[in-house]
Amino acid sequence: MYVEKMKDLNYDIKDTAILCVDCQNGFTLRCPEELPVEGTDEKWIEKVNEFIAEAKDIGYTIIASKDDHPENHKSFNEWPPHCIKGTYGNELFIKHYDFLVKKGTTENTDSYSAFYEDMETKNETELDKFLRENNFKKLIIFGLAGDVCVLATIKTAIKKGYDVAVIEDFIKSVNGKSMKEILDLEKLKVNIEII
Image 1 (cartoon, one colour):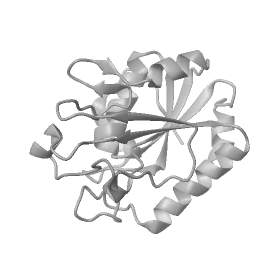
Image 2: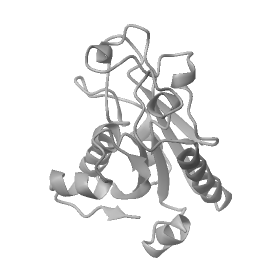
Image 3: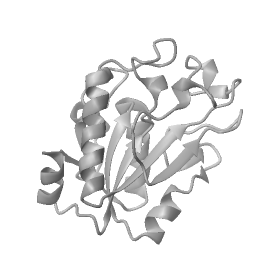
């Protein structure tokens, strides 16, 4: 169903990558002591993996990002400890990806956007380089959380000139709002397709 909608939007495998933002156990109901986002139960995780398998089978490139924090990461002043290296919460719940980017890997670096290792210094991950080297111009984005890391990644992607679509069913937000509601509030000056 989602792959058909992607084709309808001319999001094809030649110039489109699928970006799964922070699809980690630590942001799901699997890890209630970390940062679980409402609606991220096993049924939802299974649907995400079914979509990824279908997209992979027809040749889409799947990119994953993840928080990869040390035990004393600076974000733990604002958020509960989450996605600590070597823990179950740090592990991705998706079963396949072709390329992985990590962010917030040292005590004093942090970023919501998958394009940056550290947002303050604009120290980039390898994401933009990978996309440009492989001639990707369009991104289909989903993941966790819609109002935090997914939104930051969308904003950066737009600034860098990528066309963006989102799969709303595969985005859950801390504030409980749909991705459409979040994007409407942001009043971005570009059209973002909602699948």
